[in-house]
Length: 115
Length: 112
Image 1 (cartoon, chains in turn cyan, green):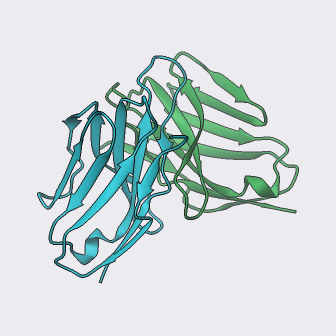
Image 2 (tube, chains in turn green, purple):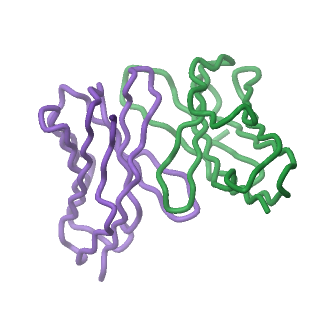
């Protein structure tokens, strides 16, 4: 697609429920990243995919968080047994792995509210 | 500890002036540094990348400098416009495989 697409754009869930957040990266971008941004805060790295592999999961806050990527394309971030502290904007980005001038292309994010 | 620091206070300037934003880092040796713009409710947008062997890079009204001795990058917007009002984030790659660590950002407000 023309840009990185994330769905849903907003999600309100009850504490204890599971949620799935979807990211559809730019076609051909082999690298995909998930970040979390709390209100007024910077971006917190969660996980990085190169193709379907996740060489760096170091940012996942707890074992309630997991992510997968299939077909080198769409990625899903799953949060189990959501807690109020999980409320944040979850941002997905993709990039081309080249040696030239490149940056991330971000989606608009999913705003998650746990009530 | 490793840190990326950007001025947390908002920068307020008059239209037409040059805005200068600062990014300082400690205990990193990045191969490159990037700058992004973020508007409310949107994801960050990539602006510029500067490599460790480049002192300065320009794109239209934007200029970025990178001093690896001072561990500092400066981001300049010349002839600023109200439309430049946004939060600007710096980011660096500590590991060399394009996993970016972001600063908290500086909010810029350009007044007519």
